Image 1: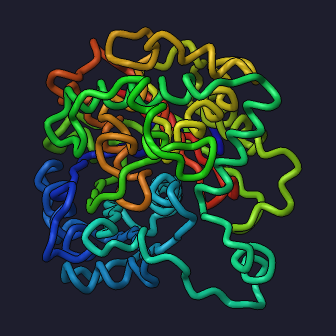
Image 2: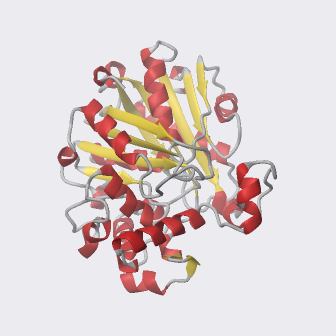
Length: 385
């Protein structure tokens, strides 16, 4: 995207819904709850919203949310590309605001996977004519963990990465979560604890895998000029980029350790006019511990194959020199099916100095990275104050 678009729009409001296990509320209700909180955060009302960008596990989410909230928007977007969908929504909102198609965008996500037990349902109906129906489902592949287990096996084979390196990621996340009163898991966790947990898909163990929770979140995005007149300090979109390669089944991926993350990082950093060394805090989608190590390498914070050494010695934890996933991440804070929204909210809160005991000293730039589906798409965003 053109560098002239940097700092043209800003996140003016950000909020989570109730988190953890929230029985009795639907994903739509969690979105509505988060939306009302984000509007209050920004000092706006539903009457100000003329663009709705919504994402759940259902179809037509934007229209559904608009009806539920009593909004008749000028612009609606229900794009679903997996966990990075809300980053995509910010990019789309930037374009829509610049084109005059809306002026104040509401972006939401909600899921009740924990209350629904939807990650425990076993076999899901699949069109037998689809690529996945023909070549994956009949053979019992666990998805998506089975793919990431193969990535971990490949990384270990190619680079000698050890299970202890994966455990470092989980332990660092837990240490951040212990500083976050909203985190779902706050009990102490050691490397030995991670290594003692049961295999889910070898070499990934239970503690290498993200939580399953209920949660919702919402963002208010508007022009930078308008955001400066609102209730909270604006957090500017400095750079944002995406890449897409295939649908859910990664048959055409030539190397599962090279998923086009690097090009999104380069494009977003170039648009923002900053370097990796300028970044103060990193938020990486941590559905599995191997995903963090792989993303650190592909984002360029360390060389290929160096991720295991990079995370060693608690480097990602609160006392380390590379703060990452400061909420506790999807591994220990919350993970409602798709985690991109909560990554963004944590980045906004860090830049607005609202994180209490886990607050970093004076951060000015945050990098948010999220993938979509199974190595299918990637997004990188730079936020700044």
